[in-house]
Length: 236
Image (cartoon, rainbow, N blue to C red; front, side, top):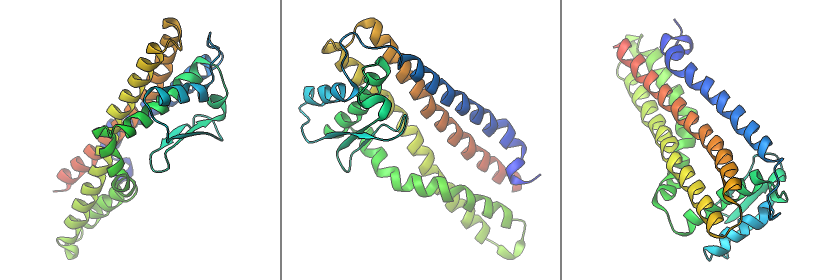
């Protein structure tokens, strides 16, 4: 059976891909639902982000608009917090939650929160590991059938696994980073009476749905890594 359609793929990877699709649907539907619920104080996403930054004495981060939907992100290298069209000027509960979450990342960066620092360090490794690592590992497994390649196939596989492990570690570290940013956002919104408790419950649902996408990505990465290891053991 070809590597791309082995039993481990169907048993390990396919279920996590299904979870990923469900998570993407969940975040879009939850965001759409609470995008229609205006906040009682009529504060916009950009104002909510600015409030969180000010409350933590962060004055060197610029908040700006970015095109698209759910393209919101914080760029630590540029110290720019970018909010998408449905978030920047919207007064919805969803918009305030997303904007506050991204501001949470800016706060993490300002205090040099160690998991965020570690994740930022792993970005180059994760980019290379996720794109090249699996292919090198598969190449090592493929050439292991040919005695003429000798130890070269093992070198390819081990290198691929090493690189992909870095990507898996990145996905794992992303989880506490994302959850912490949401927790910081909710705590500051509550402390400043930006939203009522009922509105905060809506924010929690939006941010929890968003977090599910990161959980699903981590599960897929872990499943893919385990699959490669199992295929290697079977070949040996």
